[in-house]
Image 1 (cartoon, rainbow, N blue to C red):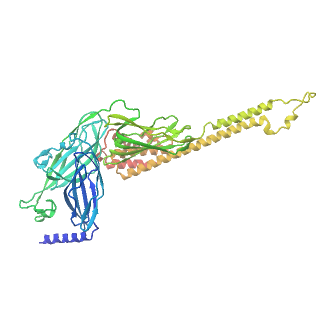
Image 2 (image 1 turned 45 degrees about the horizontal axis):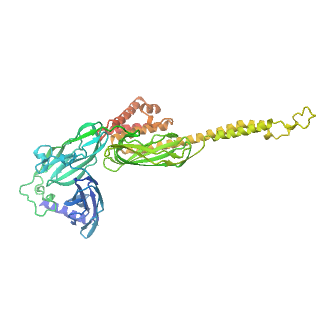
Length: 617
């Protein structure tokens, strides 16, 4: 009796809170915006802050897509005696052909309100079901997916790997989807982050798991979906996986007398119909540790074909390139920033900056880069580069940028080339010699005029003397111009030296400002401590290089190693050893293909690297 009163009070409080809650709000999302023909994706329409049932369409008509209603679920959350509720309506979408499809806005009637869902876009690609890693690597057992091979586990959970390709090239990025499902009546107590086992390839960090409710072979499963990507380091035949996991689950042990009601809005999952509420301490939940294992997926890795262009640096995928330069009007020796953006889908981690097709007459500085990903694992996105160049002479255009990559879909190398960028370069290095030459010519002409002896009309005077020379003005005398030649040359030389120093100081200031800006941005990223191990140590070693270059102006950041940094900052033996460990860890994670997860790096290692960097001054 006491339990019933307590339960009634809880429901009354929840009803009051819901009555005072915010007005209903609707959202609609796709569990994935990209899918291949034959694969399903879920459409979820969620209505928050409502108790009323909604009137939803049972099917949505979109040519090329089969969209069917698959069920609903209700969730109630209590925080500080404030109760919020939401209802999720699920639809299964099965694409019939490839293309880009628009799922139109839907009108949902909730009580007295008409709510509108947003328009959604679904991109469908071609992928025959015969490809490796389709739905064929989930081993069925009876009417439920297979698990670890034990009969009890086979009815509880399953795991599968989805790899869209049978073969690939060395260095090519291949997307991989890992799915782990549990029977909907199974309560998951503990599940570690899954790992994909195998040798000969690197695995990127898994995305956050997406949780969805799916119906498979007539059974309801809660499915966790993880996305990642792999890249083979050498040619050969490999096995992707298998994925092996252990999970602790609680399985409901129902009473034989419990019968399902004819109309059950919770689809058999009503928590208040569970016998736990009549016998809460009867031990109706059984804990199991189950083994979950997927089947491996074979993959053939081929070497890249011969005949790679000189500008190829390892980029594999499909890309486009844009470029622009500023400023358009400069002096000889002034810096020009070229911003290039390479967008597409591929292995951005192995992509280097594009190069000038003709470097004659130009001085280059090391480029900087920034990557913005468009998906969960960094396969698609845009990588931006900033290249700083300065003209050594008068030039009318910046040569086109060239970038080469290998397209696995077309089985050939492709070279992208930007348009030539027109500029105006002012200044003339020959101006001082021209002025000096003019002065010399004037002095020579004056000297020649001075050497012409005027005709003597006084023939009877045998010694005319120098009386005529004394009346000539000073500026008309040849000796005066010869005497001015030296100070004029000196003034022109000092002026040229001053102009050169001003330009050099401007270039040094621009370089220092650019290095300081890059150093500050990387330090902010390191202090947030949200980077993957490989990115964290790569940025940490780059900060050391930037600090060293800022301390000694004649050092390029790219040439700084652990010994150079220790010498410039006069580090003691202990700090020098920590510096060597930092650069060694950066090289290890960059070139060995490691660092796909945080297991490769401890928090002490991150803290030690950051303390070492901030101690440099």
